[in-house]
Image 1 (cartoon, rainbow, N blue to C red):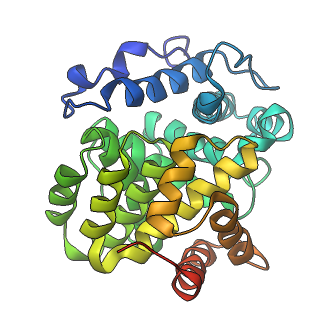
Image 2: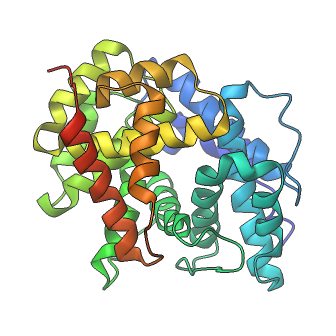
Length: 294
């Protein structure tokens, strides 16, 4: 248990993982290191993030979400530690904490379950995204669930991980996504948009090409970007790379893109199908209000 609850920073080394190496390597590895730091320092009231650049705090809380969820599962606490994190200092980082919970299930070789007492009724489905990210990042086999909705959410996380695996090389990313079955492309592009805006690592020219590569999945790319904007705006800190990326990928400023996510969420139920309707409504809002660079 002690080994499970302490993570080695070396596991995010891109060369060791066999990832593509490129100009964004240092930045994206720093994202991974912030995640590991948050995991190793996690407590029920959060942790000291003062040693990290503010733009990395969300990734640290994602790691903390993984740690707290693992602790809760292993001790059968019913989600007490995770709930305390979300109610305390982590309340501004709810999106990444829910993603981190998905990492915990993947690391314990379990499929995500609701943890209703701990997680937000709708955001809890992000644990499937976190699960998919973990499996893609560590090249773990991913069996398709019989429920296509959960698979779709998981593939958004898979797409996020591809951003890291391809080291923000948008041309390589497009080739990788194209190799997947066509019915998975939309969710993979959604994840790529989320990672490009939230994690960063690409130049403006790269992002313009990313939008072009997305082609008919442009709305999915924008939906992922909107999720990232919502997470950043909620945290109270929107780094320059996020502001730049959301403008290019969604044709809007961070607050407007975040508002699409918040508008689309209002009145939603709590099922996985409602989570998918949330994503679809973001795409509709983007499509009706967009001012996208071609």
